[in-house]
Image 1 (tube, rainbow, N blue to C red):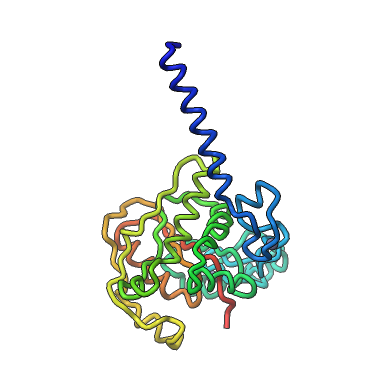
Image 2 (tube, rainbow, N blue to C red; image 1 turned 180 degrees about the vertical axis):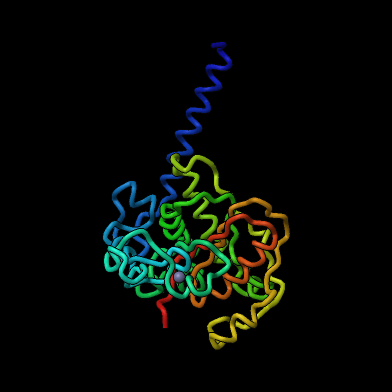
Length: 270
Ligand SMILES: [Zn+2]
Ligand SMILES: [Zn+2]
């Protein structure tokens, strides 16, 4: 190898080492939930300690693969063997009767303590670093191919008021965590410029459940052709699912071949 190439590769190696130690130095030192120091490299990567990660509300509960709502029974046809035992996940009765415009949903856990506090701190307390543990945990749960992550956009007035979009922070954290996982095979792109919010609506929480879907009709538009792409729409919380469903319709109208949703937390059914 020529001398120049040799010193060049050594410089590159040194830069990589420095880069790795710099990244390690930026990793969180304390658990996002209990604030105890994180000693293990894997815990520092994820951002929370093992006991906290394992104790998230409903983290291991069986969920509908379509809407991520908790299911207490696996709705197999009456009389079918194994109808009372967990088996391959099947859609919940609501998704079976009226399938939403997305095929899959990944939710980390229920929107309940302490995960709800963490989501609120990210959203309203400007604790933007909390997007990382959410993104790392969600990336590890993606068990289907995805080409593009699209965060649910905020309307321009709300973005100006808050200064950031928590869904974009989570989407970016998912993409970064996915890139760190060598088994993932390829980079997962996230793009905040594809989905646009064309109307500024009152906060969903202030509206009656039935009014939400009607108010959201046509609330999103897609800024590019998504023909043949497998898309996952990212948000912090799924409540009625109306916002994600309306965004999914826009994504599907733009040609996406598969639409999933990824949320940090899922509210329990009323
Ligand atoms: Zn902890
Ligand atoms: Zn469902």
